[in-house]
Image (cartoon, rainbow, N blue to C red; front, side, top):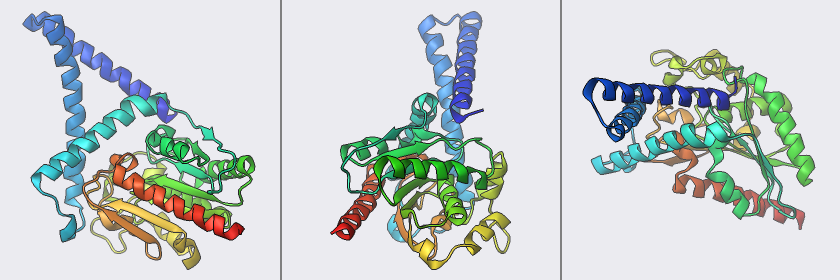
Length: 317
């Protein structure tokens, strides 16, 4: 089952649950239709809110120390939670259930085209906020739906290979820039290991568990197992992550920009996103899903892409 179909099914289940609660409110408590509607929808939203809140509590159990300059006060924490909750609701209830992989070609662009790779349990709809920025800048881009959703991370490499070649053919570019969220960053690194780095101008990862996340223990599928990290073990990374790192050289690491948040509610410890030899850019006050829509983060992504565009222009002179 695709992520889109799964999310549609979950939305249907939530709608039926809201309907059942509303009908029960009418039959048992004599609620009006509007009261029943509010109670039904409110109950579903409240459950979703507690799930999101629980992610923050679980990640706090395994959190890395937060540097002083990134520590948040109460108001900033509430603001961060509301941004993450709204991002999760929008992505899972609107953009991703309606999304499919897409390609947009902007002829004449001198910036390397961008390939977008989503994370675990998501699809191309995750990039609903970055794609318009790429269009506005006239940068060609394409997205990939990584399926099956619980598959082997190495098994996604052929999908990435086809997408890279299709994007290069459509644009005439020698290299592509890959922007990847969460698991997508590991997919990109696995593809680079299997197919070389010569066609990569830059790999920009957002909240990628380069050294695993303790919360992956609660995930389903082989890909979740490949992202696992033990809280009390040495080394903490699972065997697959250690093998991935062992097969990378300094040149491959130098191609990576790892953007992450010290308040990520899925990647824990948060410093798992720090990749030795890469350009590591830290943020504070941003949740995991919100990395794909937060203006500060997207500004940084666009700046990294623009730098590659300037480098490509200088190389052509």
